[in-house]
Image (cartoon, rainbow, N blue to C red):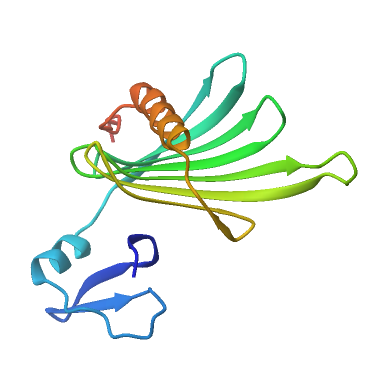
Length: 177
């Protein structure tokens, strides 16, 4: 089971921890840790902040930074490239603001000289621990492809560009009520 296919949700029900798995493998969920269950059951404050990025030549994008309890957890981006292709990206962060997963879905138009243009869909996943790449995967129209080193470098470079524009923490403005 890979990290991208596993979701564990723990909650407290009458003082007992209950775990639910959403990995689709039919196996029972692992036992929940009561400390994790308490943290999951506590209230969270989720805030989303929008922004715009452009390199003024090849791409422009709108992004949404999501904060949970004031800490950045994910940046979601919708990008329109100069050749009119689109890219949807998400950059996930741990508690130390280090990227843990970089994801891209790109719609590409391809054609040979004797065929009608066809839209292809590319899915790219990069899993990281600190500065180290743990694993990568890429599929183009559901066919596995080799991830090229430049693809990893480009995703990491762009993630750093957006990360530099986004605050790592968010404090909601105070209101006088």
